[in-house]
Image (cartoon, rainbow, N blue to C red; front, side, top):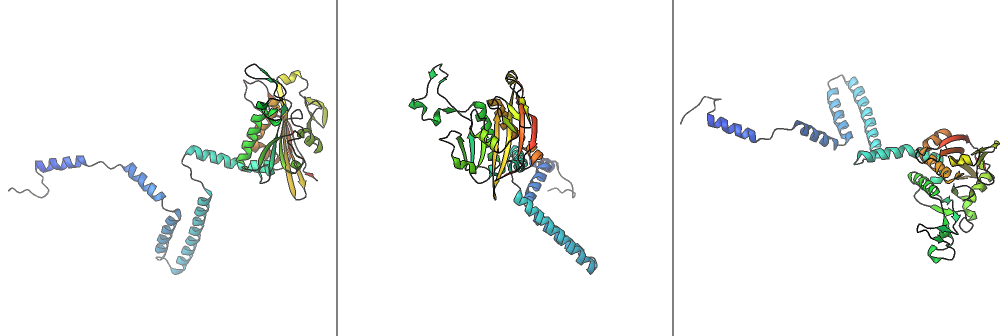
Length: 342
């Protein structure tokens, strides 16, 4: 049997080692680092702070006693503060599995204060009534080309089922209800119309959202007149006026209305002793004026909050009827209003 010097390898042994090494998978340093970071992230942050605290205490024993006391107390106070901040942030933070979800939650967070400030009791715990615009349909043409007279036809139900809301008004009202939902209004929100068999006198004690002008919502002119809104409609509801300049009309004439529609957004705030109700009026000369007002509240809630905070206000808006352009309401006039006390 032969011998070999220490450190020497024969050919067969060397080849065997090379083959064994080839079968060993190379170490993925990136994966190792990733797993290490992931593992560290499962350790409560305050536990790492405590480890650092123990190390500082150990090191401080190498300095004079008085200095050790000062260092240890300072580090203890700072570490306690860090732990408090970490725990506070952990209770206020929400983990989401998707980046898009996080972005949406952040956007909702940014909208919450303006929604709460502008809408106030409309997103509160009490009853809120959305009073839709509506007209009675005694005759119409269906999409089969038939002339339909729903009166007396049981297929169309009773009187409430024979009333209709224009599509722009319905779309606008749904946008306002979405805004209420974002503000936390998940219950006690009721949709009604202004017809006498639907709107009850006791509803005046609740906060209201009024959709549409007097042509389709009998409550709107009552509110604008009784609480002296600066922006109101003419007697025929074909134009908007500013009470400080009653000779100026929006639109200036009927032909102008073919190109541009106009609407108002008015928040009225009424206090009854220690209780406050909010009446939000969104109404247009035509249906696109109403829709413009609803979209303005939804899209520009942060601007409204910047302009007026929680105070009542009035906007007069215009919007082009050209469907090829972006539907962007333009503010013609705006003003702050006083709180009404009863």
